[in-house]
Image (cartoon, rainbow, N blue to C red; front, side):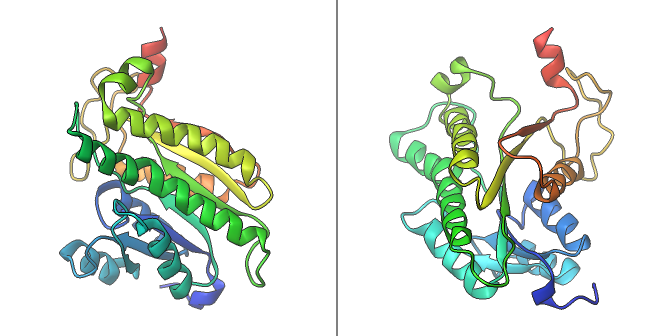
Length: 244
């Protein structure tokens, strides 16, 4: 544990921060000295308890797929860490094909609406220039390198939700430029530990990206003061092959 006090460390909210890629982001940022609020739907879950014990992440509970969920999460996060100036929007739901209307709406609420709302709330708060907070914070959205174009969006509610989030990221980067940098990371076919070193398949590099690769890109974008409105592909070069 760093000898810094909690208040002197930059505070970041990581949605979906106790599972899969979100957990890798939480661990990396905590190890780098950030105060991490790890969002979870169940603060008593085994994942949340284990993460808190291993790296000191603080669980914050909310359901982002219900009306008012994002606003409730933001209020809880600010109450826990008034110095909050950074958000990583990692929480997401996935389904490979068509969904019933109700489930499609719930996916859009979680994958698109909640990140957009959290970004707006943070941007507006920082525009008020509250004492003790940096002049400009940062948001990093998690997209999906597999979402390519209209064909994906028309056949998959998941692809549509991620495409909408990509558009929202660029719009927010312009709207909140005085208070926020807003960027994104688009992972490819990421395999969790202990599956590192698995052959990449249809990728330029010989191995697939790892959750730590994604977390490293997120950390860079949180810190890179001159970068906004950009997306980093962490896909082992799959995009290059698809472009040939």
